[in-house]
Length: 444
Image (cartoon, rainbow, N blue to C red; front, side, top):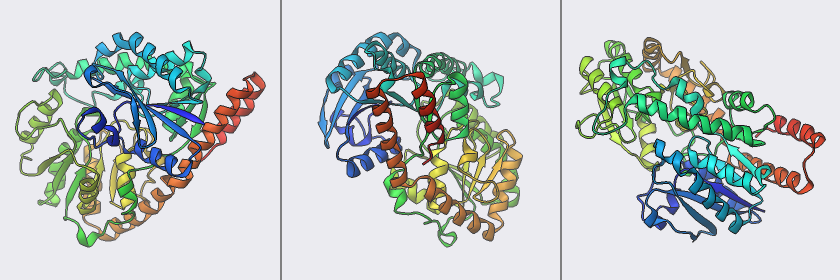
């Protein structure tokens, strides 16, 4: 069986092939790729990567995987919509060359995903497509501003798009996303949230639940958090580069936290915030800077920059609490990683988080736009070691089952085989009904 993966970035192990700096994100795709390659030799996987610099485009083979590239010179800008026709033709060429049994689209957010699905439709292969749901921009757009004051929404900073422009991009990409979802028959999902979103757009979609596989090093440190080894009253937030991740809510919560725990400190990973040096900062970072100044937090927050897998594990394990302050999430990888390690978590109750974390069992959930409750729950964990240890143990045990590599790998392969079998045997309404019921009942 052959499956072609359409990725929205170059996987870390392939960056050198294209002369690119190795990425620190998207480990869930590499995780399932490695598991499938190790355990199912009968499965041949081809990979498609977007390349912004056409001079770096190439096709080849690495680690027993054939890879292809497609030009996307404006990956996260409105201009990428104008490239759909060119990308569609490129995907047709790739598909005709690789001759896949399954086309697996990783994420629907960006225009190249629509182009790939359109190519499959043009080649009468739409019944071979399965979407792996990640974020959903047509929904995220509704949560983008995240209580940002009006004066920051139209602000331009260092030629970086304003928040108004960024939200409009989500809206435009979301229109293509809705079309894509209407076109396909199959989807991988993980949460009640993503199931609700896609089935309300396409009630005939065959939805399969299949959880993620995390980065390999996190499995080596399952339950590794130990309250004896932490930096007391440290708060870790793993992403903060745009409003949806909610760092501004955590900053608003800090005065209350500091009133009880004066040595509390925030550590932030990730890139493109750069609020410390004032250079090349985004409009969102301007707002963050203003909050830091307003609340006198300059010496209470450290921006760590991008962290590789090893440094992320180390930072999690030394943290007293991990915070997810997002205004919307599907199934948060940062929450999953923290839970697997056993880091006590305070998370906003948004999107599919409730499918990961049980309130007051694995951690604490709060209303996303209530920073006073975020502060309250952080202080509860800081002030009660028994509570922290309880959450650590429960979360790690729970997440161990959710991200089990063997179970989740088998589910991917099972779905591939089912789709391939249905496509080979033809598709009629009786089969559709029976197959859809099987899809809805499938669990990892």
